[in-house]
Image 1 (cartoon, rainbow, N blue to C red):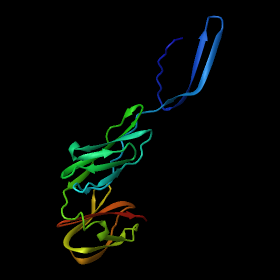
Image 2: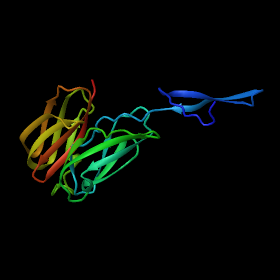
Image 3: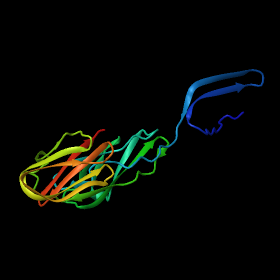
Image 4: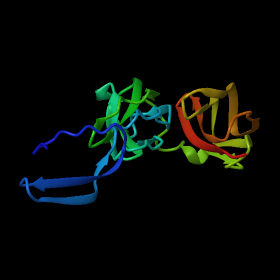
Length: 222
């Protein structure tokens, strides 16, 4: 009986809309099928994943990813503190350019969005940002070989082309360290076999020493 009724929907779905007009003698009605779609604001995403240790002084970009959220149309990425860098992207991948010569602890978060609003931000993914020296022109990922890759958790890594004492760490996408070996002496060439007792997924190997920082992705499939 109302000309402009307010309707409250209690659940998601697609609904018909009917209009009925009467002059007291004759009644006319019309129905628009599947006229209104009701959705809810998306839930908060899981924490992003990506590199947990990065270099800020080479102008490199780093990608962070998140799993999709039901009802989300787009995503908003956030770095804290804001001065640590810039992050772009409205989808499941955020691309970070860290501020040159900035160092410290930073976090990456993401929010899911649709026409109903924004979710709460995801849990923070912690990133340690370093100013890396002396490695831009001569030591990089090509000095590290991992095979087989993908693997079942057992693999060999080889370092070559430099002399240094390094620390090797492997962390999962949440930043948890699953392997660490200190004071490995690289004298031109070095190889070591690792047997990780971990679940399937993506892991990141980090090689760090004086004037040396190398990162490589390791994929475990079982």
